[in-house]
Image (cartoon, rainbow, N blue to C red; front, side, top):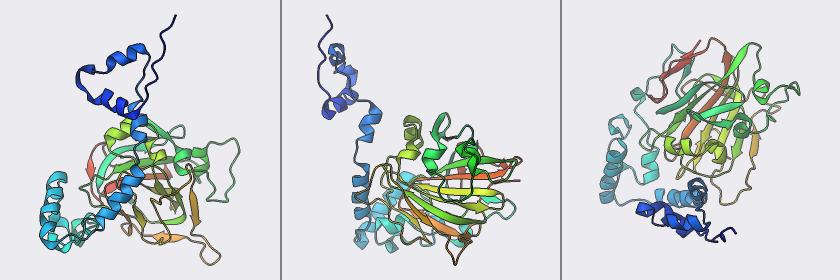
Length: 336
């Protein structure tokens, strides 16, 4: 006769199970109780609510005497280089939001002219390479679906064979391949992002979603993390075909701003799970979309987050990168 299952699934008990030393609650598993998984426990945290609260806190104007101690602690904790900032005087930043979104001195990030693609932001290279089997790696060995990440291919009228894969449908020129690069922006990094090449944006897709941390440790833990999180997908084209840049939100980074799109509102209190909102920049008067030059300012986060590039290029395209390396906006990423 089997043991009766102990019906204990409360979150407090699960939390104590993982926190208490020496397996204090492990005997409960012998009578049939199973703790909720760490992943499920983490997903249950109201990260959107916390991020909105953090956003409100960021807007509170700090007393002048309190600014330097608070910002200095942040600088020390996350290794911020204030010598690069356009405004070095900490007293000039009225609130945390202004400090997070600080601008840099013009000479701090020279844009490489000799390569066709530059880094759109400061950050750490998590992964890069060719897209294979419609899967993209968020960190080494952990993948997510290309179609789940970008959403249905409704931003174009171009017809494709019904038998072709989603990946093949994105490639516009025969003989080209699809590539990707993932850049993680840490809290101490410069929070603005720029155009990585000369291209035109035809379409914007906003996915409301969770705001889980995109720290590399969490990214290794939760498969398809980038597909769960709120994100803004910009799609268009460059000289070699399809091009997209996606800004992925994270905990305390509900605010994603695109400078040329004032209608974009992220981290709204209510949203439908799995939904997305589409905006086309192509119209009867404008058939070219939004033209961006390499290095042009594109948008900003309120704190660290992630940029994902997915683009088409000839087979001889070569990344000038190493996984795990630190990179700055304007530095070369790859070329033909």
